[in-house]
Length: 317
Image (tube, rainbow, N blue to C red):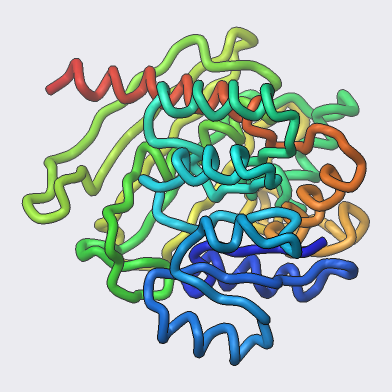
């Protein structure tokens, strides 16, 4: 599998590069970035044969089978269209779009082309959340409530590596997207009731730095999500699953029960790295000619729920 990574030198582009290096029969053959000199040095450092500042140049290459987009949120939908129209399979970091209209367009385009198009909802692939999902599917657990905290200290425009960012991140359309999709994936239902509140809009960033979201699915399960860019402490996302048969706390690829005892995840998947597992699914779906877990079509309900949450925020202004 010959891969192009757009945004390869960014925080998540690097995570995908590291993941692909751990996958047999997969290699990065092209990287795309905004700074030619930086990309030249990056390609040389990682022994990648081609670099460019123009995605179209990579898409025109015969030695590129598929593309991973680790680019700014605002570019995702347009670049997904560009890849599909060029006949390339594509995986985009979340969100697949930052508005419902673009999400509808790229889902329709994927169906028209028949190519594999996937959104990088890594939580579906983290062994911790896979363990919960497998138990739910087997009828051994039922999710009654999810309590989730997504916390960062990000009062300036910086990325996960602490580097200056050229675009503005968003608590709703990016960070909440993870949990909205995961809650609906774990319960197997789309939220029927939603509510949302946000704090003051930051004068420089133009976004709210604090947000509270509530969701309920028809089966009765609840999700409470707190998000902040003002948290001066450990950062990341922490998931508490309150179930009919136990309580579990997930921290990315780790899981413990409600009393702090670790859960053995050794038999869940071939790796403990959620992004590696996500990329493995992408490549397997291409090889097998099937729809991947976390396809654009499967993840569209999360976009619809985000759109309804955004309308809640707009109505409260």
